[in-house]
Amino acid sequence: MPDKIGSPVRIAAITLTAFSWVVIIFLTLMIVIDVSGRFFFNRPLPATWELGEICMPYIVFFPFAYTLIRDSHIRVLLIKNQFSPRTQRRMKFFTDAISLSICALMTYYSWLRFWESYTLDEEMLAAVRILWWWGKIAMPIGMGMFTLAYFLQLFHAATIGQRKQV
Image (cartoon, rainbow, N blue to C red; front, top):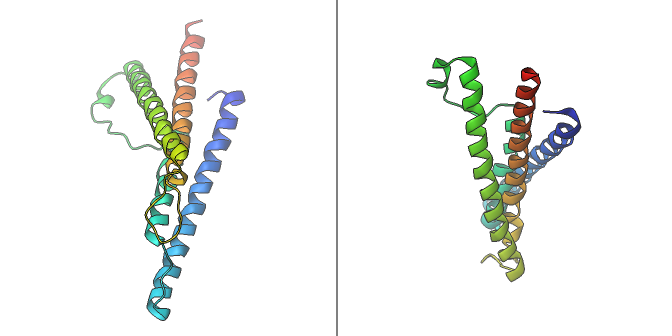
């Protein structure tokens, strides 16, 4: 990735991933406290399951961009490796363009779902008041970063291609 643009995106992706780790630690501690309270005192934490549902999107969607930036996504290369390096680069550019489009659509539609939940002040049915939009905001943020990472990856591939032609 170009340094001037890619560096802030990389820092943001690392920050989102670190936040995801914090959420995992919080969720783990909450479950330990819930199980301990249930076992020893017969008093579990209220709404542990519901809070876990709110935490899951942060754990899932936030690390996507960081994984893409590190080029650590799992790929099946059985067919791709049969082609020349030039064809492989073209195939990667094409699949990244499709992925960018899908990620952009997912970002847009998840934002609409979040905004609807936020404006309605949608609540979960739980023992305590938990707003659904706290969980729904994670997908547009994570997918937005994922979209930006794909865009920068495509931009980088296009500019490298242009430099070689000159």
